[in-house]
Length: 477
Image 1: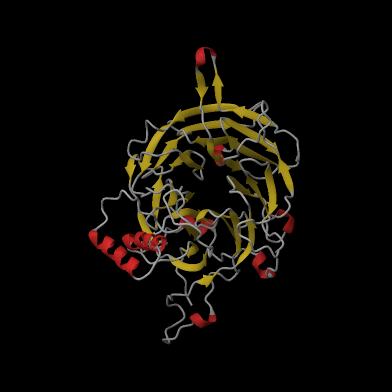
Image 2 (image 1 turned 90 degrees about the horizontal axis):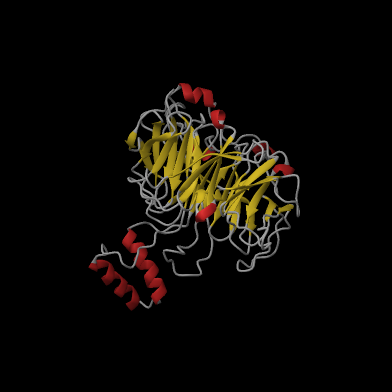
């Protein structure tokens, strides 16, 4: 991989976190697009609710803040190294009107280049980049990837380029290491649906069906996990204590909760575990169904700790909001973050950041309508909390992932494919049917007309799924 040496430094030339915390953001909430990359992949099927087409699924920053790592619905992991001068004005963006150099300008966003692509024959179930990632150290540029019927494997994020252009039968690079998680009774591989690789990177946690497993990253091949912590304990008489179901989300604690690991399940359960104790201990578990009367979720897809470690955010699929629990204080539900549209089956993930004021924290989340909603001072209010502000980030496509840079001044978002309209939708007007019939008369195939119909009903501009990089600071020429 050829990367400019200057890119090894942090590409986000922004003010430090301490300065941002002391200076509240401007009321105008200026958000500027500074970089973008589209996912150009072939569409081999007609979009449906279960298979909507090419899409970015998740997005996150590397630990050193130089790189964006994303997973796609086409069984691949893509890596973008951001230019070191991403927030600097380009020469062609100079002031053409003769104004002074302190005036604001609107830069053209840069087209990002994909520096690494991992392609697999089967869809990864979970991934976790190395917590010690450094662009200056090639050995640190790795990612853990989980599969349903394979061991958990460690891959380089920048594999050597090959001549294999067959997207149907890609040949992934040779893994650097493998970790086996098997069911002892049948010796079958257990599907790792959640991975957590916290700093300093010596151990990682795997979530699977009714089980948490702790691995030593230095012990590979057929070595068993160091700990196996069942999330449910069966008692006599057919009763069970704990959380039964697939562990679909993991989050490592921070600050006050540094020793706690939070987990979420598809059955809408939340568990807190202390893996530092002998054998691992479950300190608390509960169901969110009783607290989610305003959100109505369909399984936990993400759990996030607040930067202070006191609050836990629970994010569910097909949910109109998120639940915030005061874990270190009252030990109960504090508030419900409402006002987020998430009707699609695609999971929509959020990000937290320390608030610009002394109270609470910020939460950033995408929606299924292409916008990003921002909640400020979360933790200082109870009840139902509406978004503080929002902006349109991706047309009308769902924003599946939102990731905040460690500086707090740059946000990365990723979008999915075009929304698919349910065939039972009663809101479709007769004019759409007329347009469909006219398209058929022009000689288009039935599948083409169906896709065009769904696009026309959404009333949006057709574009590829994309990654967008946004600056939260006013840029000046």
